[in-house]
Length: 73
Image (tube, rainbow, N blue to C red):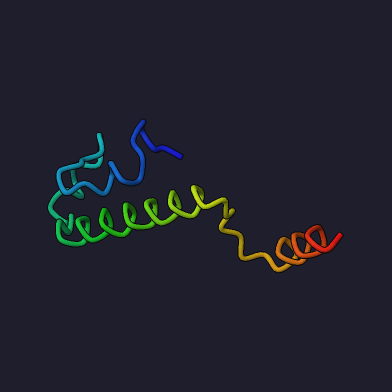
């Protein structure tokens, strides 16, 4: 998902600015943005790792139950 052609990680960059929103520039919390970038990239890395292991990352109990039924059939 994008906003003005940038992703969430790009918007979280400390130097990122949105056109026509200059009035908010002085309120940007650079340290907060750095933390957001760290959280987003860590989450993406974890998701990528679980995808490589063949996990869907679902927490839905119905999905787990379905997989268990298929394994015992």
